[in-house]
Image (cartoon, rainbow, N blue to C red; front, side):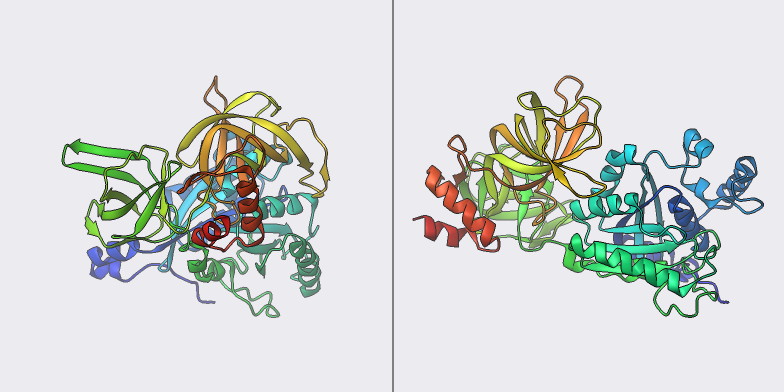
Length: 479
């Protein structure tokens, strides 16, 4: 059987062309998750091994450690490539998120290997927060388990759009097509509950290498792609939000009296020189004069680019502000609802002051209500007065100032936030904003200034039921 190779011939013939090609490759960030002992770390080790991404000294060290651990007999334990902590190797489990990097001729990859145990839910959520794809492993012997459902729910909650269900250890089940079909049917029913749309299934054996990088001869009934083929070819371009231009200001660059630039990374959307913009939360308006990068001036900037923006007017713009298109604006409010993953031993309680970081904006605030706690194993909701370590809940918050945000489902970049302990400065929670909270105390600032409670309520209702309407359309209704 021909083994797949990922080496480029350019390395030998034109090293500069190879480096340029490598620099411009698309990056896919993905995580592996699933039940304990489903083989997540082994799968990553197999990906690295079969794609020839392991150095000889690494392989030699892992081979020696495999003899010590004795978990795979005479075979090399590829899970040791990922499980680097001593406690992980002793117990044969993953405790912390481990990141690994590799590339093929088509893409560069960043892998987050996340723990399977329920007590490490916060680690799994952290690893998933920046991923575009999730590889959910299922042990062919046991099928869909409680922890499989839990990780699938968290992946869905965090907005991961692409799912690959890797049905592992098919060698133990004699490569049975019936086993594969039964598990596929069970997971598909659960995926519909979570409204997962792009779901792919692949039967494999991480230990042996079937259908990981190379096509398996043991499963001729499976005519689909290998795991590596899926990772290389899943379409990612539609994931990028090109509609909502959001530019959080991270730094004001004022080297002399003749230059004032606003630095940051374009979170989403397209920014062009000459665009009419609004600075939030103040509502000041201007026009983009220039877009500057290290390599020179741009006519157009795309999401993910680090840029410096200059404006035609001398207006007040500070760190933490957000520059948006004048006719397409996000929410500006101090009250919102969010789904929260709690990450520390001390529970989240109402009335206590916490620090919040929404985008690049810092604020303090309090929890005003817990609408429900979500059982991450059954997806059932129940009443709760507090959130404890690794628990997830639907919460309402009130901040001491207005911040700029979108709903997380619409824009992951501007819809997420972290909660920070004010004494230790440690991140203790992560949240995904679901909607604005309308109350008599809430005030939403727009480019036309302060608006009434009735107008806030009408604005919120319109945005809820017609989320794709432009800000200019909302303004016409509010007049």
